Image (cartoon, rainbow, N blue to C red; front, side, top):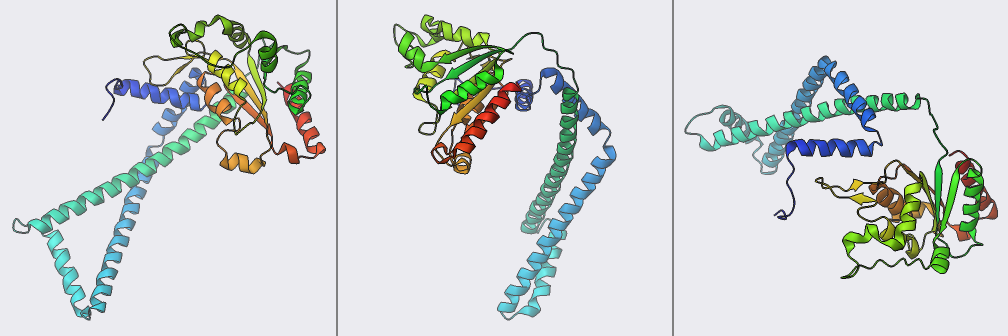
Length: 357
């Protein structure tokens, strides 16, 4: 039973929502997505012969299924009659069944009903094979169209109208540790080419009293969190930035509590996202990109295959939901077991990646 407060979508709204989700999943602008759909329609309209061939192949698939079913049933009858010692009765039994299924007479209700059920199953089998064949054809066309659109995007000239503004969000209490080295390398990679600001959450907590605890009650309404004067400087920093870089260690599988508190108090409804008539949130921080750099002591392949967060929640869920995309991810796994050469190579890679931004 559906909740009473859920608005039912009309077919038109549902189609629009599907298109929006597809476009955001592909990270395409609206213009590029329209171009993508145009290529698909144009290519499919010119594939009439292929559609006919795929329909014939679907019919052939159904015939193969039917033949296998009949052979299997005949084999089953032969085995059963052989085990019962009445193998000579197998053919009369099969002939009686075939005659009953093919002869539609008013006095043969059970046989008639069975024949109709079999005919329905055959029709559904043909239809499912046809849908599968058509879907595979459309998938092939869609992939080709996406490749062409991405090629067109890559060939466009890039025009820089101004220096990009970068905001570092650093969450590590030890300012002499590995994460501090990562911050220094990123700063060195961007030095002199971009306008950069650094937000050290632990220094903010120590020197300016930043409180990561989200509180709302009778005096502090939840609907007014986007107007919280204490968080105004941090909202201004996020608004100012074109690119946000997060540097932090993985503790207990996720981000440090102080960074989670920053997300809870700053990326709130009304500032980072909002709700409209659609069931999915409306992103309000579009036009920005991100980079999440993490360190942890878990073996790399184990973290990738079996652990649920390890930076993915921030990169793929939180930032993506508010419109910050694409988001790069870099991680140094198994720090405690890493040789100095591996750590040095990771720091060099981070600096080179920052220099390429």
